[in-house]
Image (cartoon, rainbow over all chains, first blue to last red; front, side):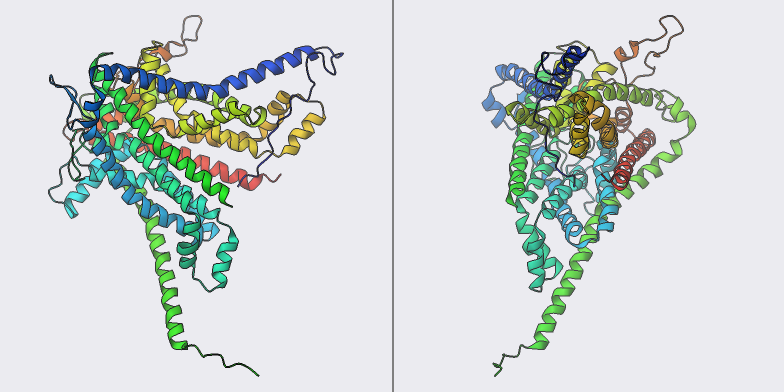
Length: 321
Length: 311
């Protein structure tokens, strides 16, 4: 934990202006001006993040507007076919949405129980030394390049599933990339949950232990409820990661839009579709080119919902104690 | 005198305690099992890549261009491209991120501008990486006409990792005790002198940790570079930055088309047939070892800093 240092809020200590104190010394005026120039430069750097946010929104919205001039929003949201490259093109986002939600659903089904239990174990059971050793390894799961995870899903997990669980599983399916995404987001879920659990005041645990509770009773009945909003934030963050994950599904799920709820079938996600179109090198301004921005805007809005939810929930647990 | 306390059924009580302690032990085992799932997957990933890739990992794998023949294809243009793109990314993201963090921590006061900046940094950290690719496609390529070059790729990844650099630098700056700043101010240093000569040097370790993690992330990113249409078959190197003719230094390389390791790997994975899977595994192994070493180095640096510095 880093100690919170107070933020400097007063102005430059060298004086209140070029005619302020110490101006009898040569160079003081120059120094005052160079301080102002440096501060302006730093402010500009800080403003760049706002600029980038605006640029993202501008690009996505302006290209999407061009897209929706050709395709009506109603068709986009209700048509059940996504066939952008056919002569009789159909642009219904539902199949891509289904693929996205299905793969992230499988991912969360893996990451939530495993990440949550890992967090409970690290926060309530493990000795500090064990935690120090295990956590970096767990965090490395989030550091593995996603294209490597894609290889792993396609050429290790899918054959494994075919041999042991589903003999007639197709080579491309949603299940295997979903499982791998789940493993990949374990560190996100567990580290945010663990932070929330460790923010629970010690007195609550001590009171429960004094009543004779075991560690698991303290963990599940005292710490977990007290940290619930933080844990929920962790799930929302994990969901946002899973929805935006690209390479694993682009490699292992088969890039074929498919309105299905069965994870054993091949399907495409929003992200996989964007990759597919980008590989095909469509001409600038064509409807196929515009469609990836509409897809990107949909994706951005989805992750925004989860990110904002996570942000609100996390703020709640910070204010609680 | 003493009130008769109803004697509890000790046998039942002990049985209950035993059961609860047993449950506690079982849960502890379950916790270990969950941790093991993650760690074993990491191990399986490494072993799988090593088994498939190690036979291909000969010296000429690093010195050959990609080729239509699997056994002759190598990663020369890919790793040179990765180095070139990382140079651009580092040169853009490090100064911009550190400057932004210095402003937010040392200069900015609590007002609405700062709040908006902070919200947008938090928001950028959560944007899916492929959206940065769309930004680059619409903005760098079609609005600014930078082409599908090393410069475009490097800047795209720089924007992607900017929040990581900002957050890490802010944390490092916050860890410098306030007394250091007050001491410098008391000696008549200006704000910038205080930051440049004292606060920044003392937080260098933390900044370096953040930069390493950011670059490790950038090295493995594939999706945004695919979106900008980074070509996958590049059998030549970018122009050398050092020339034999005056002026001896050339920046032509930032304008050249490129490929990087993850894209080369993706290209090999998506080939039909399995001739190239060994190559993909070998490239993946190189990539994985690089990112794991960088992440490990950052963790080690953080650990050492925490141990050594006592303010």
